[in-house]
Image (tube, rainbow, N blue to C red):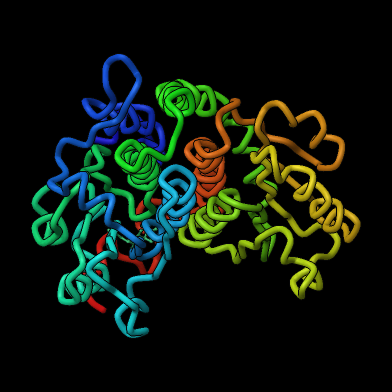
Length: 367
Ligand code: F6R
């Protein structure tokens, strides 16, 4: 049932191109000009009345929501707040009838996420669920559902469910933008073309997996490491850090690259591994100067860079893993893949149970 792979996690990482295609299927017009989420019951008038969006989820699904915020704000110009589900209802969030609450859950059974959904509905908001399990509790109770078609995810560490959630957010962003009239047609078509290219681009990253195995093996004997990035790269950094902790038990932290010098830089000393995400053209010079700050303190830097500026980045770092060129907004769907592989190979090198890490359950149905 692992289809020749040693672990479910690796199998699921390799299933991502299919998961992307399946999640897009039937939702993008054949002429590549528009996105229609026909499964949504919300009317165009309702969409135009939305004044703010709350995205609520746990763990990896929360990290997908961080990218979702950027996608929705960029494409549809609706303000978005992100919340961890275990915090949401205890902070008395301001939920009004013109708030759309989006819950994200692979399993659709996470207790805190389900409680957040109920809290939102109690306050008169509509809830849109992004979930991978048809008929799950979250799917049944939400007003609308976008199903991610990642297929069953067995490994505790989420991979293909996360990236399929990103695809769902891209589609939702384009759907909202069409109704709200916030994007030029040419821009929409460019994003759609970019989406169609992603599955093959992921395949080309997977072909280079063994490069990451080597890096992971040299990382595995370190006690602690850092992930840095700006904008959506910071969101991806947070997911990369969680994945690594979860299955390799190596301590790591993710930092907004510009925030390091406000304290954390004190922890950078000779040999500390730093994984820097450099995929955003507008922020690239800024991130590069943060990379120089850690290099000057002796860090060993692996950059995950968009091809286009990999040569420039290579001059300032120890290693570069380059990802295919895509639009800035779409890069998380590529940049996370090398981080998934790094975690996998680090866990493997340390002899841990990759698919069933200690202390963790696949679905958290208690608060
Ligand atoms: C990490 C991981 C968890 C889940 C979280 C939410 O790899 O899998 O952080 O993302 O427990 O689970 P769902 O998405 O089922 O609500």
